[in-house]
Length: 451
Image (cartoon, rainbow, N blue to C red; front, top):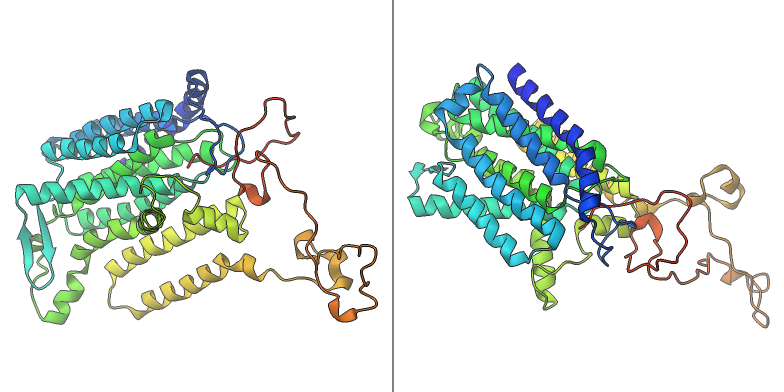
């Protein structure tokens, strides 16, 4: 455990220290795209944060290779080298996209090639545990197709959720923490060495996200860009592939005893099939909804819009930071709920706890819909958002409220139409092109990510 923690700390430190110079390089290189209609942030912000994350990945692998116990992972398995090869390819494509805006189909092809490179070096799914059947060996083509599909889905799910400051890095960090605990339990408790690479990948991924988050939290000074979002998506998928289909259920002696005991005992084996999906449950749901929404409108599935889950949270009335924290909460609930269930699937307290926390999450999610209004006599003692809006003075010739008390009710304030380029509540208003002669605001504006 100490070597895993050391690897995590080295990865986080390298990523954190390199992000500042990378930000300056991105500004000099011009990797600061103009504000688009779907963007939440108001000022052009440099991308290329994935450069620092990639060097953090390299530093973590290098340190682990020189540690006494983790060195065995490199000696007995070629998976770390396969991960580095695929990560280098997807990172390079991401850097080019952050600078030159590569076509979506080209990026999709590059993702498939990166997955194929990892498969060629041994990072692939070999078998699957099927309930009631046991271990089913996959052919080479079946394993390759399943591996490529998992890599592509995970990369795009993480890329889709990268829409607010600190959102993608925080959610992936939570997911990798849950996955690290699961993989470490399989490796340490059952003594299965095949789970060691996945444990290492999860520790390094946590370090990459933790090192980048201080620079990316609201208001963000730099975005990870596609070079970062696709990179952490690939590392997350690599960990899932490494342990899914690599851990032999027969080694754990789980297919024995009564049918009921077998079901309970095999939960840790089937969790690898489900845990990667629970980890990216929210990004995957966002991905599916986006594809359905765009296809229904007759648009390309790759066409960008402002209909993602984080955009909807802003439209409901959540602030930028609160929307991110709500997404964190649901990610942690799903990932750690599945992890806890894998440890003790027979406990009803776990299910009850997940249900209660889900109810709390729904209340927090819908809280802006039920914002209370203080009575008139208490308005001086509460924040402005809880006060009733003043009634507009009646125009000449219109009956006053005193003459018609039944018409006395809250009226919305008259609002001056907001011009393009001026932000709205919580920074959720789409921002268009700005005039160079427009005056800059006195305070520093909030910013979001470039999705």
